[in-house]
Length: 422
Image (cartoon, rainbow, N blue to C red):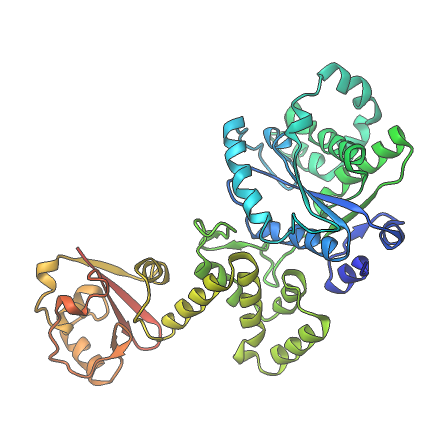
């Protein structure tokens, strides 16, 4: 048993916790859980911090339980939301749960000899509840005044759209989850984001009232970047854990683009690197920020953990391509992924054969005129498939097209243009 609480403390995971939580965790093996919302077939990087919390719990010798909220997902958690969520069907939720289970298995060991992780679906008990029994046995322990005072409720009631009774009941169901897990697995710890504090302590109180037992809570900070943006929000949209939604290359690039002001904290949050190693990377980020060593280590560690070594190697290779690396051997799918955001033009196959490089540059938007294209070639600033071209009289052929479909033009350092052969 390692000191799980101490690990969370130096990594900055602890936002708030119940008074005796540290003492409780230091005494013996504890079962703790975190819930995950199945509103999509994939989790996103906003779920990484709670996933890492469960991972540290297991590494500390305790038993992690992940709840896939098949039952509460039918309601929708109002925490942090300004509008009511779209309600999902049972079929949609089941499909989403399948994807989430696979992602959690990348981090948690469900076959550990001493403390295997558990994955449960709260639909197993919530969908079987009788409303009259629930109101009689559970509802009477909740004060409307206290529920109205919660931030997740008060913030919504201050808005014009208000809140439905469906969402208002969410905290009761989450509290009941804690009670159910206490009864089934003697679960005595619930963790989550700081916006869940009110719901979690309601569960703590319910266990105390109905079972006369002690339960505990730990909540993690909600991450905001140094620029004031909510963590995980990018111009390109959500960063998913599913490689089919966010490729390993894009995932890797997200971490490579981490602000210098955030990188040390992200190393603590999202990797298993030791405190000594992170301190060394912090020193590198402070003295030689242009090397971006800390970002490189962060991107490698998180990508490897989620997608594996092979996908990491492909992501690193793709990243080097964008900075002028060798294009030979890059798969068609990787090529499209790398250059998906650059200006592109489609050229009929017959038209490509014999066209001059100068005319191709103009057609692709790499030059405004033939004269500008010629001067750029003469200046040594034009690259064809990342190979510098010095011959301004060069004629193109189908042999120049990678996979017979694509030509990559580069002007200067990173100004790329993609020609698609139709």
